[in-house]
Length: 150
Image (cartoon, rainbow, N blue to C red; front, top):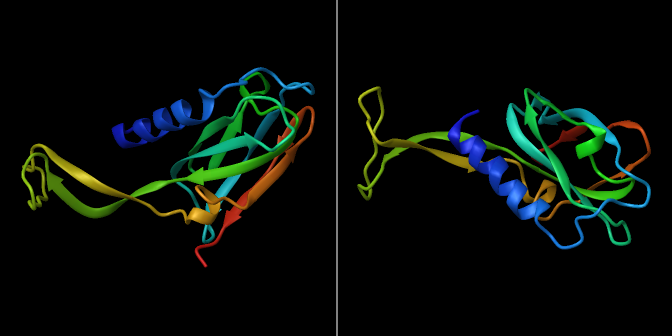
């Protein structure tokens, strides 16, 4: 797992799983798996979060997206009920900056201390301002997401 991806997953866990009321829901937890595509192509690396809707008691949960697939086992999965879904994914802009040197750019193998610039390429309508939702049922659930840029 790359450092930027590890940071995104870590941030997700801090923000979404450390909230008051992180107890189990009345209907228990369920397993959830599926695919995530953006403009017809699998999302290579990202994260998916399941946030209980109003009236559903339980913790927010999530999973890493790898090669367009995600999976949560029941013991770590979302509680039964309606959830808002947030999907995030970063990609390289193709530019690099040298740490500690304002306005500098570097490329190539000798660019020690260089950091790849990353951008969030999934539109806000699928994460910060997500309009995605799903209803989790007891047992195993499959939910595929085919996101569009326009």
